[in-house]
Image (tube, rainbow, N blue to C red; front, top):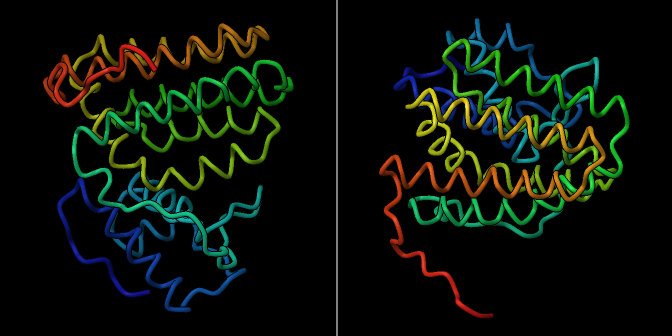
Length: 247
């Protein structure tokens, strides 16, 4: 593999993701090939393992990689052509708020279904995902990848594979919006604690087999995320956000 060109720290994962995707699309890594380990990629490109994790997450979200439990990441077969979003859709704060609305609708119902269908093993996986986010935060990291893992685990707990596929598809368009919201939340310790509590409320409701509670907790989480953006000055109150009085 060719060496990774140096870039600003906050963009290293994007550059590595682009390089890996280019190698896959150019046929230098073929469907079924195993991706080098996290440690190998970090050493080869001179970046941290957290950079590698986020880069691999991005490439996986594009449908170019698949995970095989206990075996690692492998190059995926080319997906059939279908629905796509314009990546420029997330170049404004207004669009980030629109993404929060989208996630609120999807993840509210997804959490409710998980509360009625999750197995003990899946609930245990949700609790491990919560711990992984806490660990990332304690290291001073945003925990972006870990956050996605939690929501993917909730999707898996619905036992409806379409939720998992939908999340995998839209994650590539959520990355920038998620980075904005989590960077904003990391500015205040009380916000970090609020987010932790909101995540825990969702998981607790799922574990308690409380679908209405899980739905409310997921919706509240995204509503508060929007409010934190406004309080942080990232999004102006009411700017370009007119709520319909009837519909």
